[in-house]
Length: 423
Image 1 (tube, rainbow, N blue to C red):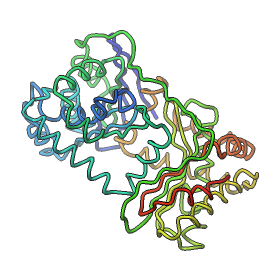
Image 2 (tube, helix red, strand yellow; image 1 turned 45 degrees about the vertical axis):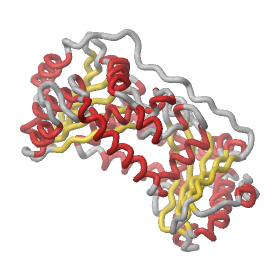
Image 3 (cartoon, rainbow, N blue to C red; image 1 turned 180 degrees about the horizontal axis):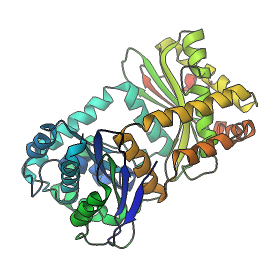
C-alpha cells in the first residue's frame, strides 16, 4: 500500500493514500479527543460538538447547504465519537475529491455552533440517549464499561447522560472546541483516486494558516481496581437477556496485543469459533454470540457476549466460563491457531478494498501510534504468535479477579448469579 506522510509546520499530520484502482475518494479528519477527555459536568460534550459542527460554517451557513452539496454529486458524509477519538469524513466519486476535502476541512475548522440550533440538537441527542437505552444489545456495553471503570471518564457513556446533555452550553462547546481541536492533535487523511501533488497543495493551502499549539491533547489515565469478580444488572423487561462477560486485559501498545486478539478469534470471533459452535450450533441457546479483545491507549478488555432466554442466563454463563477454562488449560490446536490467523489476515485484506476503510486503517495508526505499519507488517506480527503465547495471555488475564459480568434483562437476584461467577 503506497502512502505519503507529511507533517505541516503547525503540527497537523497529513496522510495521502493514492488508490488508482478505485472510483472514490475519502477525506477524513481524526481528532484525538473523545469521552475519556471530558469532565463529569459536561460528560458527552465530545459527541455534542460532533453534532453541532454540522450546523453551519462561515462558508456554508446552514447544515442543509453542506449536505445538499455532497449528496447532489452522489457523495456521503458522516461523523463518529468514541472514547478516544472524534472523526469526520466525506466520501465522493473520484472527480469530486476537491469538494470532499473542502467540506470536511470546513466543518472541522470553521463551525459556527449557532445558538439557535443548540436547543434543537439537544433534543435530538436526548432522544439518541433514550434510543440506546431501549436497545439492550447495545446498552449492555454501557453497563459493562460502567461496571469495569466506575465513576471516571472511561466508565461514562459517550453520549453523556440526561443531566449533562441538558446543561451543556454554547460557551462549553466553544471552549472545548478551542482546547481540543488543535492541529497537532489531528490527522488529515485523503485516500482514493486523486492527483497527489495537487492534493498536497490544496491541503497546505487550507491548513497552513492555522496556528500551532504546544503539546497534544491529554486525558486522565484510567484507574483500574479489582480484587474479585464483579456483577452489574440493569433491570429491564426485555424479551431476551443480554450478557457481556469480560476480563481486564492489555492495551493497544502491549506485546500481548496480538495473542489476545487471536484468543478472541478462537473463542468467539466467527462462525467456526468455539462459542458459536457450542452455544448456537450444539445447544441452540442463542442467536448471536461472539468474543474479542478491545484495546485502547491505556486500558483494554477481553469479552464474550450473547443474547439468551431469561431462564438460560446461568447455563450460558457457566458454558462460557467452561470454555475460557479450556483455553487456559493449554488446549489450543495448531489447526485452530492457523485458521484464526488466516481469518484475521483475510478480513483485514478484504476490508482494505475501499477508500473509506483505508483512510480509517491508516488514520487510526497515525493518530494513536504516530507510525503506520503496512498490512504485511501486521500479518508478520500475527504469524509470530504461538500456541504458547495464547496460553500465556489466557492464564495472565482470564482470571477471577479480572472477571466482570454485565446483564440487561428482568433479573434481580444478584447473589444467585454471583455464585456461579467462578473461574
